Image (cartoon, each protein chain N blue to C red):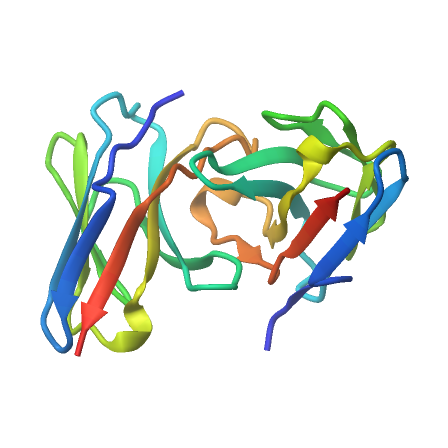
Length: 114
Length: 112
């Protein structure tokens, strides 16, 4: 069964902490994505990557960075967490040729920043 | 970026067909129409996608208007497990960019 896994389902951090969210896919997909989901705002793209060590900004990259050292792993980093980064974070992957292929999503990480 | 408009909520009875509409009047010729759904406490799940022709798969059918300014996701026999938020989104075939927005979608309630 194909899978996108995320390191935690729930995470609580304090303001100013550095936070790492990890995502792993086992489908050999080129593309990987990080979204955040907030009530009334839908899913918004933070960053995506189409190859190892490649990244592109999405719609809301401020306050975030990413790392893709291996094809199967895509990490989202909050350099200094703030309360407005409390959200549900969703990772996804897809084949290259993204527009004509489906995305596979992980279960999400609900992050609370106190 | 082209946007989509969906009703906030819809209701259906179990085992009846459901037609979920989506308007995308500013769609461009290279935009693919994708549908995803999100069950409670889960990540979104792919349902179906198309460009110009109607599409069928094991989950649903996608009917695309001739002018492509609207589309309809059809669940042929709704079950309680189909209760979810359904998202209609557009993806630009000109790029590999991930920049497509999921709006608030349509919350489908299925009544037994």
